[in-house]
Length: 124
Length: 378
Image 1 (tube, chains in turn blue, purple):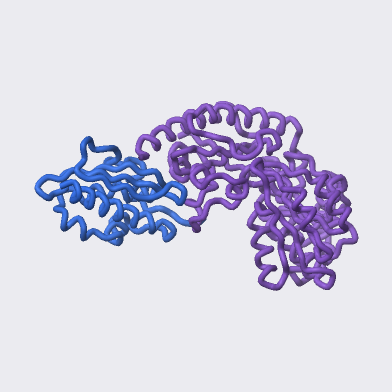
Image 2: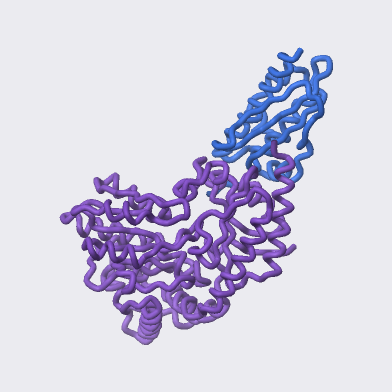
């Protein structure tokens, strides 16, 4: 029971600016499973191979919501190839570390991104 | 900011009159109760008066009350104490699968030492399967340990019935009564208890003081060696102020407190269940007067907890996400709750200090938070 969230995780959890949906997204990444934990949907808008907008809907803990929100910020204005280079460690670092039991939430966000880009590529 | 404390199953506010009673035993009457001088005798008298008071409240004898450092130590002493004392007679212990970790992990430690443990199932309502319990007892069984009231969902077991089963089968019966003390009548004779665990800090007493009731004639293998304190069953200088505080805490409980808490609990349940996608965990009737455990569908318990904390409201989750493990609560699993409902469970536990105004603030806040979280949920 003994862990503490970083201020950055709590800040994003309290006010997740990127929460929501994008109408007619170019790619959707749906990951997770409610029975074993968190569920995340990532929506991306792509123009000229560049992610111009990203939004999310997440059912999960504060870490999952914060990672979702951060991911959206980090992929915006990135081209697809650069976005794919993003790792879970990049996310963890940006949030000022994350309690060990919550590390898997970062993976969830990266998986959602990969799924969304895959979806985008399939739709093209 | 408003502050509402609804985590009284975790611990309670120390009652001001309890603190007042304890104070002199820090500042003036600080003697060691084992000493012969006046300081010592003053402390001894206070300890024995408190012991008698506590004994009376649970229908026990003074010499059946062993003070410990708390509930966990009392549970350890009861279970390991019997296991090692009676290891020539048998090596089998029966517990329920939704006991407190202080019982479960004590049993797991014993398993590593070669003891055998049976974990009896509980039903959807949160009651131990008595048929299975009965059938689990063998000629190797030395102890049955079943908690009186569950710490997560508050359901109250029929100890009288379990006591009868233990009596018929001639096995010792221990109950962790930490959550039930002061809320449900505990009568060690009526329940045929051989051992029972109590803790002060759940009833507006201080932390760091517990009691193990040990029925006259029941022998335990001592777990803390040292001096001959506590009838030579638990070494260590008596926690005099803690003992005084425990006695005062148990003495000031009234039936009226319990009645009001029950009414408030019912109000909170009724209002929270008006929120869409909610359900009460465990039996509605046979539960502690202060326990409300609600599953909120499509929300994570931890997110509710943190959002409530931002509003000055303290609650608890039973879900995986606040613990260092990622498994769902063993209690909610035991009552067959779906993992998704288990993840969205919040435990609200009231005290005699809880007011209706506080509950109204909590009800309003929960409604708002759940709505917000569901809005950002897929």
